[in-house]
Image (tube, rainbow, N blue to C red; front, side, top):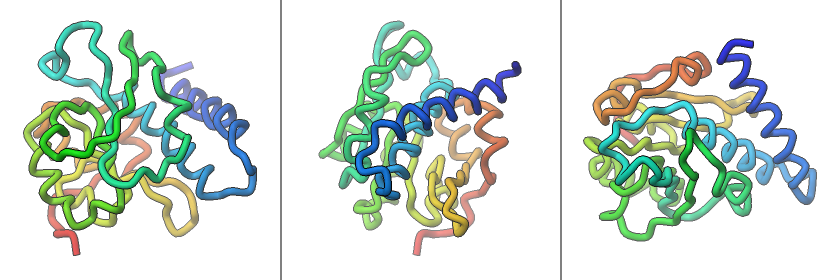
Length: 187
């Protein structure tokens, strides 16, 4: 089984396990965020950070949220999981000045008015930025993770912004994504 098929298999198994923990089963928004949490976990597995991004070989990968937490309990399903010999640590960020200490930063919809400032604080750091906001990737954000018009999850990736931050993203993510450029401003 090649890596791409293994990635899809792991994602599907993760989704099956996660969906079993959802109560009530008909809560579509809760399911959406459990699936998005699984994607964030797989981003941690499929992105490579430069050595300078970690204090040492055993430092955790910090997945941070800024703004309102739309995930509810979904992030608890991935918290403290192992990712390439590191532990995934979940943090809520209150202070914009601390975001460079994160490895993955999920920017909530509630931060729409602050997103440009947040991205400018992470732009030259090894921080993978992820959001649901429209035009996020076109405005130098790294990955937009959103429900499309068919109500399935889609990815938009700004490869230039990712490369500029010193991160290396797996081609397995790129095969699932639409590649965009930094040519649009947030409305």
